[in-house]
Amino acid sequence: MLERGTDEQAFGAPRQDRTRRFLRRIVEAGRLRGPVAARTATMDRAS
Image 1: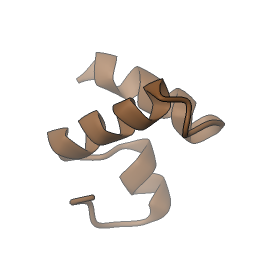
Image 2: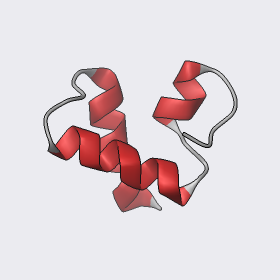
Image 3: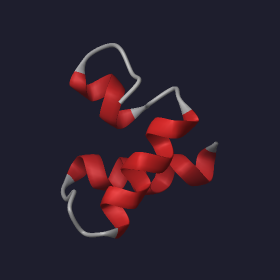
Image 4: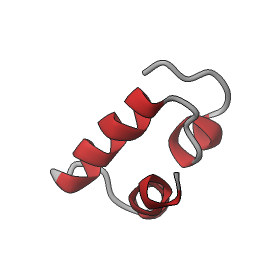
């Protein structure tokens, strides 16, 4: 990942498009669950 900051920042509000795509793929594959997955699923639509 290309992010700097806390886990909350990196997973909850990544700045890099590449990181957002990476996290979206993990969520879609079912490998990331819980609150982080919920935020990741909605962040891509917001950007």
